[in-house]
Image (cartoon, rainbow, N blue to C red; front, side, top):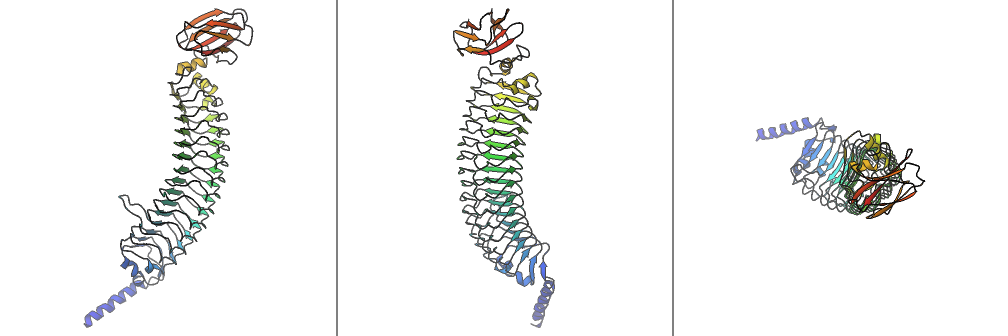
Length: 509
């Protein structure tokens, strides 16, 4: 009996001696809690430990409360609370005022699972004022708001909120003024508003909004600069209102699969996009109005599969595109007007499968020397391709050319070169000075010139293979020509004398 008592005293002495070092700061290597018993005995095993220097990891199915940690005032590293299936709140952390590293409330394990399914509140974090690293709140399916974070003013890293199926509000983040890195919200389908972020003025990295039922960006009204990318994909979004004060986007702007978005109003004050501008799969988008102040796009401009987009009006002030210009599969797009002020691109010019587009007018002012490759494909009604930029490029190409399966006059490279006057008449372009009517015609055409032909003036009709099919001397401003014997197709009409060459085109039906 005496031996047992002596052993108990020695164990107590060893524990006390080992614990006496913990005065204030402790545990530089951090600590992990996997059971309720470990949390309950924390103050016994580590008396006087109020400031943990390393990371704290809390994970355990039988953990129901964190009351044993109520002496903590700070955590120098990160704090993770995950796989706590029975935990309903964070009460017990009430005295923690700062976390030097990250704060992760739930996370998805790579092999599945994760999160805190019973957590309904972040109550217990009311004393917290700063988070040195990232704040990640994910896979907490019973969490309805972020109340409990009300006194946090600073997030040094990223803010990520994902897979919180009951989260309806960001209330609790009202005092946060800046987010040091990126801001992501994903797959929180009950979230309809960003209210709660009203005092945030700067975001140091990407902004990504996917898988929510947000209808607008109200809540980000005071953000003026997004340092990196802005990615938006939301099935309920009808407006970009809330981004009205953003003046620049340092990276790319991607608008993808926003099925109810009808316009880009809300981006009205953005003047530059440092990276790519991608607008794709927005089934209700009818206009690009809202981008009217953008003058510079640093990367590619992709406009792809926007089924009801009819024009590119809204891009009227864009002067420079640093990468590809790609207009692809926009089935209601009838005009490229809106690109008239673009003078340079830094990559490929790609116009494909825009089924009602009839003309490339709008691309006239692009410096052909800035185009790397040229692709004009599968635009069923596109018959006018002989704009200056295209003609200049075809006259002196610097890369790959793909032109085929467009309408007559622009069906393939040979037709476009002929329309530009490159193959059949050296140095001469199609002229708007020659009037040909009716056009198309099945029987005869009238060729009208703005001047009286000089002596030795000849009118020649030739096909896209430069074969001369009809030639006659003319003396009058108006000449009627019978074309009934010509096969159906696309033809050129040349009027030439000793000093002047004028070329037009006609379709024989």
